[in-house]
Length: 171
Image 1 (cartoon, rainbow, N blue to C red):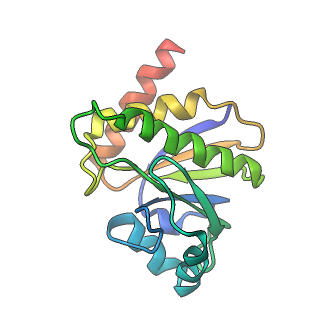
Image 2 (spheres, rainbow, N blue to C red; image 1 turned 90 degrees about the horizontal axis):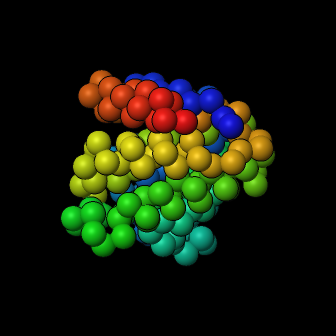
C-alpha cells in the first residue's frame, strides 16, 4: 500500500511523477485547478488534449506534463453534485480508481490529487474527502509508493487529516 501525505499548496509546483487534473469533460481547460494546470503546463498541454476527444465523468486520460515539474498529468472529470443520489459517490470513487490505474500503468511512484469535484462542481467537502481517502487506501498499488492530497486551503487540509485519521483507526 502506498503512503498517504496531505499537504496544502499549489499542485502545479509539485515534483511528482503525476498530478491529477480535476478536468471538465472536454479536457480543453477551464477554471480552478484545471485552468491553473493548463496555464502552468503551457499550450502543449491543450494540443495534447485535443486528439483525446474528451473524457467521460469518472474516467481518466493521461498526457505528458510539459512545463510542469510532474512527468504526467492525469485528467479526470469529476461528477457535478446534485444530491448524492444520482451516482455521484460512485463516479467520484471511479475518478480516483481510474487515475491510480493510469498511474500504475505508467510506472508512476508518486501521484498528487486535488480535491476533485469540490470547487464549482459543488461536491460537499467532507463527503468528497472521505470518498477520496477510502478509495486511495483500498486501491492495490504496485508501482505507486506515495499519494499526496494537495489541498487548496487549511480547512480542506484539516478535513483530509481527520478523514485519514478516522480511516487509519478502522483499517
